Amino acid sequence: MSAWRGPAWPAWVAASVFFVATVFVLGGRLLPVCALDHNVGVYVTLAELARQGVVYPHEQSTDLVYCTFYQPLAFLPYSILPGSGLTLVPSIRALVRVEVLACLAGVVVLLRRLRLRWDAALIGAAVAACATPVTAAMMKCIDDPRGAALALAAAAVFAMGGRLRPAAAAPVFVLAFLTKLTAPCAAGVAALAVALRRRQIGSALALLGLCAGGSVLVYAVAHGLLGWDLAGNGLRYALFDARPGRSLGQQVAHFGRDLACDSLSALLLVGGGLLALGRAVRWRADPVDVWLLAALARAFVEYGSHGTELNHLFEACLAAAVVVARAAAPCLAGWWGVVVLAFAALLGRPALRVPCGDETPLPRSQLAVAAQVLRAQPPAPTLCEDPLLAWTAGQRPLVTDPFLAGKVLDRCPQIRAAWFGEAGDPRALRRLVLLANPDEPGRADAWYTNLQFDARFLADVRRLFVVVAASDFGTVLKRR
Image (cartoon, rainbow, N blue to C red; front, top):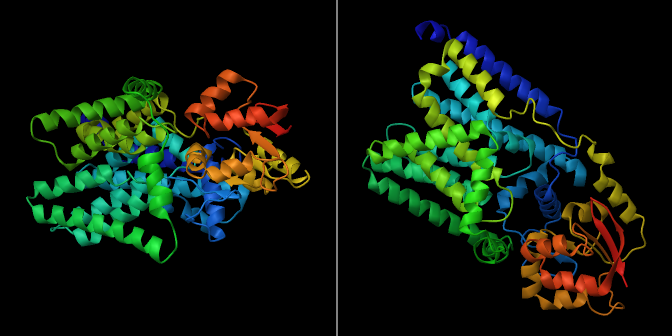
């Protein structure tokens, strides 16, 4: 074993080459259509509206249905990036990839604080980067890496040094909360575990109080000074008005399916979870074990909702990599580290070889072509189910997130009445561009009953509109 551990340079070189190659390959994947999903459209639309000063408006209108449960820091940073519409997407992707790399740097720092050699710490972070949830985060536009990076930074600020610093850590935890509601949960529980381990109950209570007070203060300032209905238009949707989620059985099935699709993620999460649980049962769990168990619990709870899934496992994979790397430190140093990284790259799906999907450049994408066609049509109220298409084509009304639009229409029946009212009403819809074809009852009924808009919306569409053209990209309808 000692001969394999040997010098540090083999693992150093292997990890460095891996990360340099990853950055190089991802840098060439900013412009393709790949991973251009619903979330991207919502982020771009919210960022573009923010540039116009529209952030959590108090009133809905037939022209703009503003519905989102995203926290402000999930999309506001994108509003200061270069680009507009489709050309904003590469900037968003670049920022998210920098955030993922920052999280991996945090893994290295944490492993070093756990007294692993530099080469072992670098290999541990590289193995984490090979896990599918981390690779998926590099390929997409999501808020999880930013929230995780802020939460980890907050926990580090709290615990670093001889004494705990709740006053310094609380603002950073609040920033994580303002990025994603659940972002501070796992790292926050780990920070509390540090306080309990050091028997500083006062510091733990101070951290909880300052975080709660800071969050309430931000919401009050947003509502009273900035004019944002952050609580009513954002928090309410997240806590009360989100679509009904999955049953426990479906939740377990989806969770297990995502674990089964990637052997490396399964090894990290199951192996790391068992290690942490075993230490907890023996009352030997430390804050890192607590962080992993809390991240797994948070991920499982989030799997109960509709929407993206692999992103829920992003932080859990980081925590599992730390727990496993600590337990297997001798196998990550020297030449053993090279072997482990090669094995992880074969098992996982590193960004070096993850297929990008549709390699079509964004300016020549189906969405860009559809936007050009819509712009060329005579002006008429046109509802596009894809918010990015609506924004790029300059169409109104604009629905920022159709996932919640049914709730808005139920709360504001005057909007529904205007959209589907008399054809002569200037607010009445004249054209639709939908993702599901109403003439396909099975798919359309499932889509609009469980996810986008609602069943009544689909009934009104079938009653008043006729399909003009249908494709895999979308279905165009016009008023009868």
